[in-house]
Length: 249
Image (cartoon, rainbow, N blue to C red; front, side, top):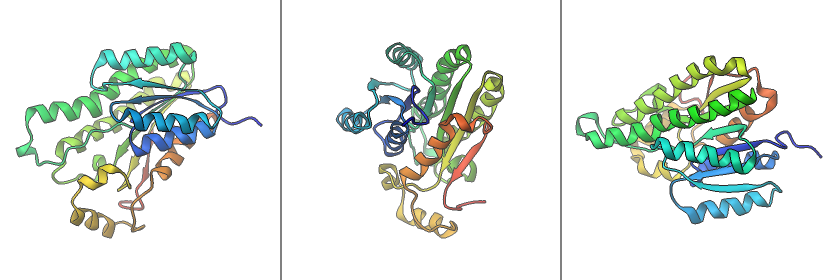
C-alpha cells in the first residue's frame, strides 16, 4: 500500500533530542527516507536509526555543527548526494539559555544566536537552492512559545526564536512561487530533557495560565510537523502553528 511520503527524503536536525526523534519516526512511518543530523549523543541517534529502519525506509546519520556554514552546507550536500535529493527539512535543534540579559556574556549571546538563528539561515539557504531547482519542498522550523510570549530570564533565547519565526514568514514569500512551503511549529512546555533545566515554580506558573494543564508530548509536536510535510498541505505556508495547550490565545 502506498504511503503519503513514499519516495520523499526528509532531513531532520536535532535528531538526538526528543522532538526531532519523534518527527523522524512519524515521517518514516509515512514512507520517507530519513537523514538524521545530530550534534551529540551519537549512540542515541543510532538507536533511533534502528527504529526507523524497521519502518522499511532508508536512514543515514550526519554529524552537524549547526552554527558553522561549511558544516551546514556539507550535511545538505551529502544528504542530497546519498539520497538523490532532499524534499523535506525539519529543523528541530535548539540551544537553550536561561539567564537575564545583564548577566549574559558576549560568548553566550553569540552561541545562542549562531545555533538557533544563524544556523537556520545556513541550512535553509543550502536547501532552498536545491528545492528551487526541483520546484518542490517543505521547510518546517520547530521553535518555542518564548518567541511570542516572552520569557523573563531568557532574553537571548527568546530573541533567537523570534528571529526564526520572522525568517519563516519571509522565506515563505520568497519561495512560494516554486511550490515550496515554509512553516513553523511553536511549542509550549514540552516533556523533554530541556524542561528539566527550567525552574519548577516557573513551570507551574505557565501551566496555571494554560487551558490544558499538562506538559505537551514530543509526539504531539511531531503530528503537526508531519501534517505540514505532506504534499496535501500545499495551501499552508508562512504560518506558525502553536502547540501549547492554550498557554496563550
